[in-house]
Length: 128
Image 1 (spheres, one colour):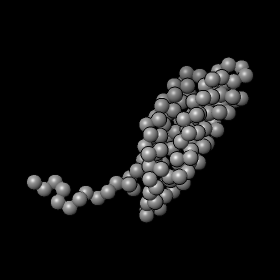
Image 2 (cartoon, rainbow, N blue to C red):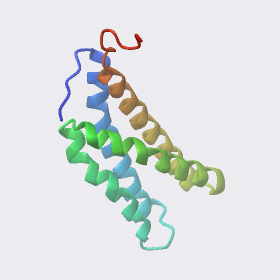
Image 3 (cartoon, rainbow, N blue to C red):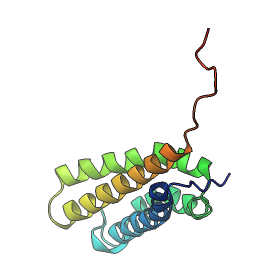
Image 4 (cartoon, rainbow, N blue to C red):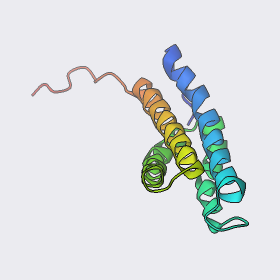
């Protein structure tokens, strides 16, 4: 289902969201493949970018369902980023903070787009 809200703020959020998720995906792949992998030569943690990559076509198509399940997934990325930023030094901390910032921006964009999707209550609702 494609929703094009009339308000410019949610439209901007719907444009920012795919770019942010794409950037988050890129940070995760670069992090676990080359910049600071858990093991030398890369690690299987690179697969944590896969759910985000699966979401990209739905985000570019502005599908509501994709934004809904992604809103449940992004807090997991933020939590992982907080733990790794708190416990690991150096380059890993910088990458974790970047992951947290991107996950937070993506989540805020989803919430901004969701605000525009709310409908006004039906007439007579709440009357006994």
